[in-house]
Image (cartoon, rainbow, N blue to C red):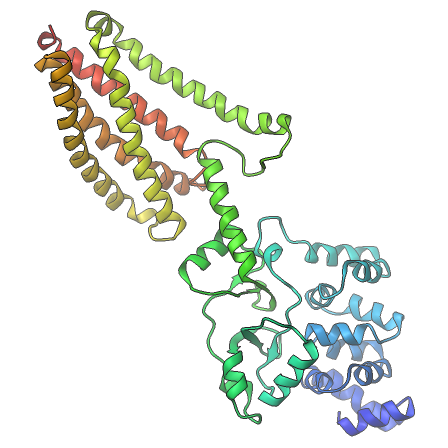
Length: 446
């Protein structure tokens, strides 16, 4: 399909039968090459040439066009052909073109289609709430690797997008193959093919990847624009810096909420009934764990009744072990979040936190011992609380590392109410170690 043939078609209102047949054969047999030729033509001429062909031939080349060019052609062909193009093309290609339309124009196009086809396209256009597809800007047009620098610059002038730092390059099938930095494009020779200045991809995500996966990629790579592809590798959009920052803020705030049993769905201005429905189940679970800790205290009721000083010092052990566990939990959560550790690192994390708990426990126990000795003058009470402090802080450190890793091991969100589980462990072990040792050393407490 030559430019001269296209000009003749535009001038006469229709190509001669022989030329039309050749164009049809070319569209059917070499749709990607035809698409490159059409992209180099004015949109009006490309639309007129496709309109002169049978729909089945026009569809082959139209679905291979860059999304912005395909949209311009769609807006210029007759309505019946536009309907056939959207209905007969690959759904992903049609959805990519519809994404470039404003909401009103998109709905008008969808309303003209068969109900089943329209429903399929709507599903493709609507990504899950927490997916990369929801964060991306779909109105980003990639460039073909076969284009020259001059042709690429001409396309940029047509697109008229500002704030571009890099361009994304695709093959004939629309699959992402690399990127071209604007600076490289500006200084390259105009006859040079884009593939010669194309750089490898730093990172990319799939359109159905979760927001937390997007954030994990961003934490590992210093990028301002993150390309999004389908499971087959087809380029569908870009997540820009503002959306990336927003995703980080959102994911961080969700982790803060879920660690204390609040729902990911709750917002600051959510209704009271919604908040109650989301929070109450975890509060009930927390109540059960509190009764468990109380039951441990109840086992040593006679010891506490005999030595009332134990009741005064009980919160000291529980509070210190709780803080130690929270520190270990925070470090482990961050490691999982940034992909610094995985499930296989559990023994190493447990040993590290046990060691940290032991050293910190000895240091805190020494300070506690001085305070308790000044307050009570009882060597037995000093020995009890010092021993319990070391044991409780070692167990709390191990538990702080274990809780999120175990949740991940069983396929759960590692942030989900981990602090509630950890509080239970630290309270129970703190109370049991303190009161258990006091019972064993009761003879020294007199």
